[in-house]
Image (cartoon, rainbow, N blue to C red; front, side):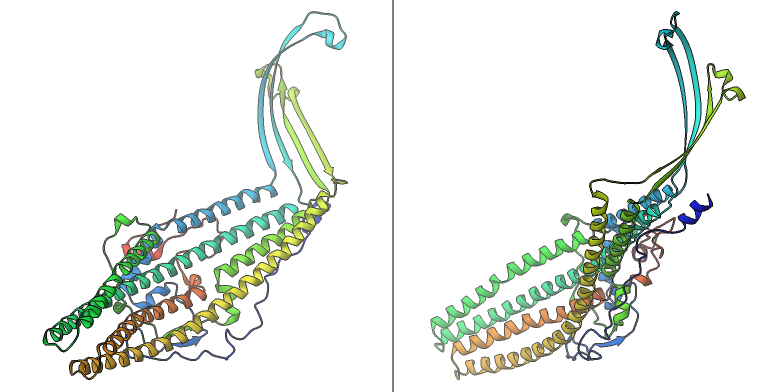
Length: 503
């Protein structure tokens, strides 16, 4: 027994160690990203990056929008994907607790009552057949010492899978909140484009009335009137596709918050109601691998693959089994459990695989190759994480410059259009020149609305790329292997004033 205990203290196979953080000091070639440029327009504030600043758990509140807060809270309450991820985590944990039972002895109680007739001729004896009753009650205890740690490696793999499911839940939470914010911003952008288009149609209609008046006075030709009418009709034709896109985007948002299209309550978000945060957190590169749920999930898969190598090695080594039976067998129920009817047995057995057609060998090699594959997938996930952050940083800087340029373009196009319109009324320029200036001004106004929305979407993308601050949440038990896991949606409580639990 002492020898078994000593052997059970070890486990074959590699001991998992988390991969080190990449040896890089930043996300871009420059040491620190430069602040974005500012523009005197809504959504045009300059943004600077605070290196090492922590990320709030409810990061979407940086936009200071009651509508977005309510949408995210509704999504956390009712989104089916989040609920499915919660259930998957619970299932993984229950499987882990079930797997841990292999380390303990198993005990089974059995009872039987038999009435049987046999013939003495079966034993070569003369005589008539005999009938008897037999009653048995036994307890069986069996135990397989985990001599080489195969069971513990299997439990380790199951625990790693539970860890994977935990970070899959965090990834689902992060993607859901980011998608809600992005969808809300896109809806607000489409709504702004529709309003701008309606204003353009009104202005073009007014211009059409002016051209008609000039035609009646003989200052313009009939062709100019038809051209302006065509311009109004063309602009009006762009309105239905925008409304269609708005309705489709609205349906996307409703699905994210767990509602059917018929359950639209008519609440709308406008870009003017959003506030662009001016100080953005930027995690250190060494922290990113700890913060990104997808990287942590890939690490858990790597851990699971490492444990599977130990399981495959242990399967090629001797397996021991200890069993014990104790009970009673009697011809009548009244004599059960008396000293004369006691039965018992003790047994120990061992199995050493010798030849299985090289199956066990190749299973071990397959597990080792699977570990190499998990390592490559982990490195690929880390590269993707750093790329996402770098893309978000570049997008914030360049889209801020785009907004500034677009605002300048709107100002120039507006001045040009006003000047050309005045010249046209005086007969200094032809109608084609006026029409060109009008079209340029219209395109610039629509592009400005789109550029404003992109600034908010880029900000949300940066928070998502950095991990979203899930480690600062108080609604999740930090230990994924806690005996009483629970996921309480605190964001929903803020909106509803109550407590909503996953279990």
